[in-house]
Length: 325
Image 1 (tube, rainbow, N blue to C red):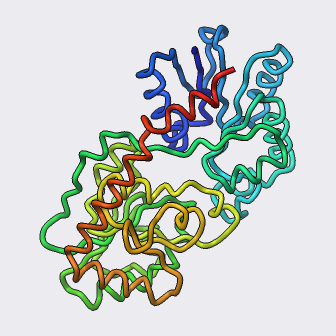
Image 2: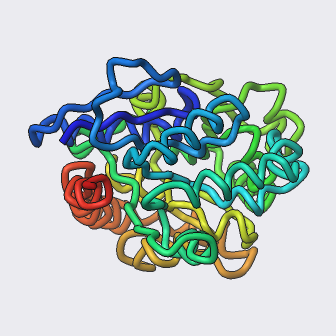
Image 3: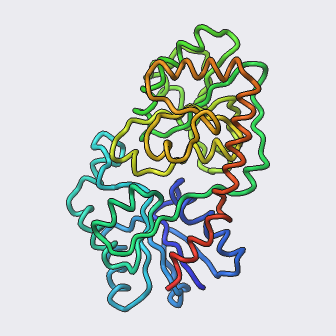
């Protein structure tokens, strides 16, 4: 099979949905290519995978291809109809013309691929053939071992400007824990000191690592003993992939996450991580994992064992099925 992945951009979504999966497809003997710009070199492709195609010029080309009978697969890994207006791209995806192009381009495709069951429910209202292809982690991550700096117990959080509002759920409990435990520190990944300084974490024993464009470089910067992943139960978050749980599990880092879908589907509470239902549990679970090293290590290993079922190699057959004309 000859497949071209038309990236929406070069950010993390493309890494999860095109770059890494296509490496596995190439390893299985398929001819693959990908780029944010289309080249005539791929005019003979069996399938074109379009990642949330919604800008006017790409939409025109997509619709032309559909009329010409080319095999198109439309991919979404976010519920773009539920993006909050306060998010960095919220105003863009709230526009009626953008939403109309998303729906029109999805409808023109032979198939729609999504990252979660909840997102499949959303898109099934608009297309008869929606297939769930979960995100997978590169198998090489299973051999990585994060190395915390020094002797301090390191609590980690990773995010972007879009997920900064989620941090508020756990920021005060994290701050209290560090204030009460001189041997503990916080490490945030993805935002600079100025952005984190506007949260309740300011003034704590805190290291801030700004955004790292290379996804593997970002994961190499993880030096957490425990990974904290707070999320509000919003329609947008409920349709997401459990990205932080996938990353933490691959690295063998136990995770404390909000008890929302999709994390509830992925984490086995008390075995591969801990799910927070009440606000006081953030600090209680941090204390538990800080004081019980055996539990922390066994939980990390159990999560890593689970991660073997969620590698890009394990997911590749689902991509083959979804992309085959």
